[in-house]
Length: 171
Image (cartoon, rainbow, N blue to C red; front, side, top):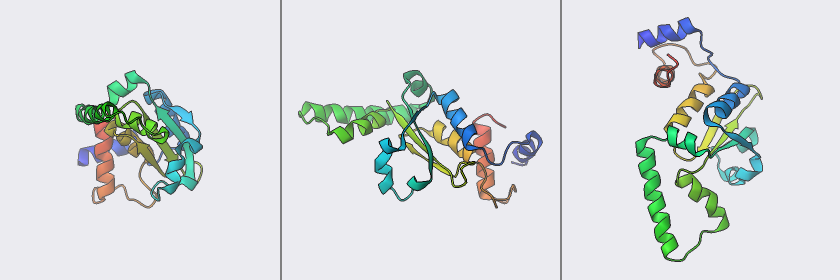
């Protein structure tokens, strides 16, 4: 862990990333497309989503990107959801309009991302609708190390952050 800490210090990686850096990462790596926040109105009822602090919302639906980023475990879960949906279709129960997007999300055909910001410059947090550990790891890196957190190996958050950086190929 000491080696990761030293590499982090030597490379002078940012402690926090800007909203624009997070947006650029989503667009370039995931071919994310910006969508209006109103599309995700259901998040207004989610107390953990901080809807009033939404900076931008995105959708990821490029099949090549999705096939590349999903793990085998995630693909297995999506296949289970598809099988359940096919059973429901066999019972001749079409989905409600509000369910259609969630079916696409559960089937691995769509991811939605909400970025929040308190100061308008740095990412405060995020919400991902869909299951994708690679995307969550990248967003955790973009979120960075919160102000007040020490870059010390005694800090559990910082140690986890170093592990994320290593897993995603930054260290």
